[in-house]
Length: 379
Image 1: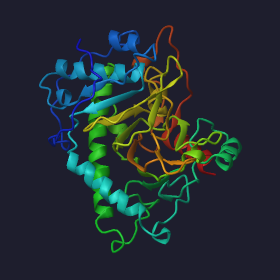
Image 2: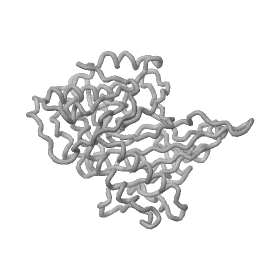
Image 3: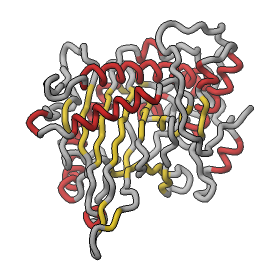
Image 4: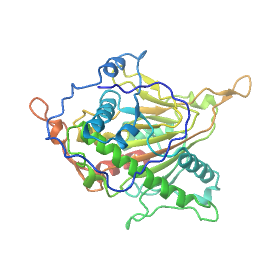
């Protein structure tokens, strides 16, 4: 079995691949129980030490262009083992053109430069849409609303965001700025939303294969596009402020859904907790890649075979502006939070339990879990 690599790669233009439409798949092999001991031996050993810790770099073109189930299986195993050992992977040659990502970043930057009155505020955790101003969110693992409120008052996250959901939702609408104020913003973000959803479908097919499920197992559980596209802006900040107790650009937390697709700029600052040593390690930006991590609902689905790993955003090296003060650079990122369907029942997958491995979690619906976490985080 070929191991995934984790070395830096040069920036390159990635050719677009056809992410839409039906894919021809071979007849699935009979289902069998997933063996959690099956792993990429080198990765499993490397992550036990902080000095050798790495996030695997995976060439996804080998899956999307595969002509046989065995070829798909090789990449699927790399992805599943990355989530099993680390909870994070770098996805290279994923089919999203560099120009598409750069255009989304450009429109995101234009949005955050708008006057405050043009950015309609986030209001309701059931909707999870709109602009979130600096200091309103406090990312943390706590689910206790009172504890989170105390953390937010003491050390809020120093970032602002724009939350975008599926645009055809009959109950919850997106809060778009006026077209005259942000030309092309809505069209760009809806196109990017669809592009990310299409890629997410392919990754979930790979995960299904890697967990010994039918390749299309998740298809009718993720098609409603109950996702969240989050544009993130981290303004420059005096280093002294970030050195206050508990302060961070984004505190340590796990994500709520199945997968997160993270597009980073070159500034950096994302850190991933080594699940084995509990120390945080940098997820250095690699041009042309997407950082992808498993979320809480995927961990619950897989009975914790796949990890929902803690991560945070810290300040990169600051530029000195006086004898006593320095300023961190601005940072941009775009996160696409992939979720199962709103009413999907998340219970242990049939291949992730059995003799000696009982189900750890009670069933929960996507909406119940995510709305509960958002309610505690923002209020």
